[in-house]
Image 1 (tube, one colour):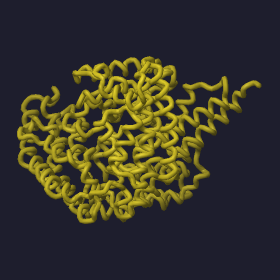
Image 2 (cartoon, one colour):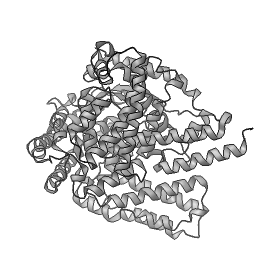
Image 3 (cartoon, one colour):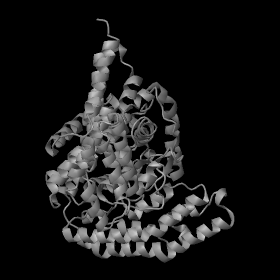
Image 4 (cartoon, one colour):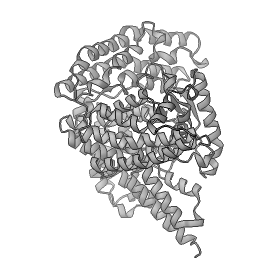
Length: 608
């Protein structure tokens, strides 16, 4: 699901802001929690703290507010000025003193989990304050050049008021772009940039947003076909205003950005690839590992886990190769899978139709594995053309129940000769159901949980669940074609390889080419996909570690439940319990499942 979470996770962690004139309001709300000590129940104070902190987050990160469907900030952008960044650093962790006044022992089980997660997130935010992540404003996966379009297209667009909000945001966009340029200049001066090799497509990505004709720009996509409620003279006025703003202000701002990136940023970007080569890089990478995996594992420990998993999965691949009667070596089998025309579509619409067919076959199987299903629907769309060349194979864009936006699985239709049919079942199960859409939509619909848990989450849980979901394919009637089974193994290998190459490049001295070669030697993915993936790990250190570590933990807990409960084990109940608390740290998940298993045994012991 990396597309949307990459942007908003980076935004909330790195781009820092404080709403001018409202600081006293939020400070007063935090203080009110402290002042209510002994006057109100602890649970009531805890939720007042959660509400105050969520309101602050929505106010200072209005893009995030739009993403989750929180009303009131649709015309705003996060303030990326240096003054705003400095103010945010001053107030980082200010919820912790209020939290410290709340007696955890007086809380119920759900609130204790919320307390622990909130405390962990606040402490990690303070710890992360040490690193200037706000200087990492742009790379081939995203930045204002892509995120602005995705945000505008994700806004409500049903009436004139919605389009007025979009227009206001469009009018404010040039200042954001100029602030981004300023931060990039500071990053150049301090040696904090993405590696130069990964930036090669960014100027083209920027230009793809700004054709000369306004209504051909992805930034104005919603203004092209206005809904019936915005027809007539008012609709024409809004469209004309958007086109004028684009021509006079927005397009020139993006032209300034493109010129800066092409003439100064890329030539001045660092030549090295390791996160540990950045200032204070070893500590920075260690924190990334900690926050993305929600574990205390070291880079070397993760590297070793990856090597063991690669060895195990290779053995399974060899069995499938034998099953289909291929006589060559495993690397030769990879070449066959990458190049034989039988495995590829020649029409983009055929590819999308095939993904939709898989999803339709998955939907009715869900009831066999889950008792609780989400209400929010999902759809399948192509990755936007302006980003497809440098985007990964697919990603999930969460819905927003509050505003009626469905979730979307975006499939990359660029370079069809790199999109093999045998990977499609595993990919659909990961991005749609029972993977990201199922898990994230359920969490969003958990009204009893505080907002920060409904809409937030830990990457190791979210992506671990997505990878675990791929392994459910056989139980859902998929992977009957051995090539599709090999595709599932390829995707599992892909995530195991990540453990090796991410830690290899960022902590153990591996080169980019060494990582590419290792990937090619152990997975059947196309060379284009492999290069895109390696460059993703380079600019997003640590994130790719979360998938396999999360999957291994969920599988470990399932094995524990099956062993302890025996004939009483119900896969539907187990899955519902894994997802019951939303996306949580792996330590919290383990405690919850082990306690649930113990309670199940006590309630219904197995004879013998």
